[in-house]
Image 1: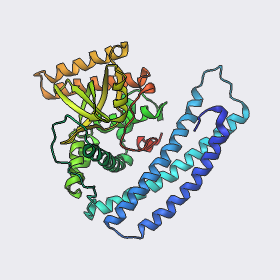
Image 2 (image 1 turned 180 degrees about the horizontal axis):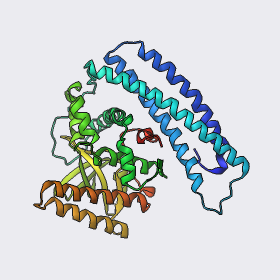
Image 3 (image 1 turned 45 degrees about the vertical axis):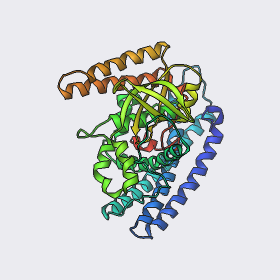
Image 4 (image 1 turned 30 degrees about the vertical axis):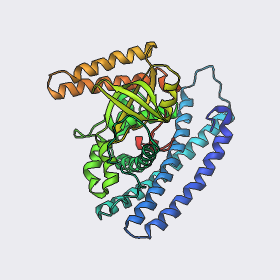
Length: 379
């Protein structure tokens, strides 16, 4: 949707449609609630949570645009009819967000009951073996199929991860917005989908409560619900690695051989966007978190390729070299970790505030685009 002053009428009509869709969520919830605590109910709730999450983010995305209209340059003239439409649309957004968050809260509470009843998460994967090791040198059809199924399972896990933090009073993504200088008061300033994905990725893995990030907390609380195949993926997500990976060469279909200078190891990443970038022949470094499976590695999302020969690329590489230095430092662990986290935060600030994320080629978060802005404290 075109979010602009010239398109306010379409924005208003879209919000009216969202209002009707919201009514359907209440009907669906009553149906799912009546099924009874079971693994089948978990499946239906996952679908419902996905729908509500996407719905809330669409509304929040519009609301963020409406809020940004208060900060337009003085030379931009807003007419009286536009001001009235802006006011009405904002009020609609507030109403829709409140109703949807109420529904999301109910679904999450029901999911918690399912977890407390220890209803297992179905371990439904195709005929693939995620534990079979390979030499990391090629992307066969079987490996690519395993990658696609892994990506789909990550999408399911992310829904639960975000739900875990959704109703927290000290929301992790609010902290992420503040750390990355993206918030003023309770207003979140995000201009692109990829910037939103960067914020989510940073919040999941670089913001901590009681010494653990959201993924580690989720693993500790729920790993017993997972069967062997999906547990392999969840464990990989828990042990995720951060790096500024240097691209080496494309491998087969959608594979990219990369050098992780933090571990001094080659890593085979499967990622369509990165593969296309490397095909151009340019030398990139990719800011990302990635998880390693026995057969391949994949980004957690928001992988941001940066041309190394640019001024921004050199600036980021200089910061990354500090992380490498701290990694090899013999200082007390807590000092080393604090220094590394500050450098990582600085790198994420650069990709957002210096427009790197606006021209990004890879955008591969394992959840649908426009999803889960509601987890940021209701901006």
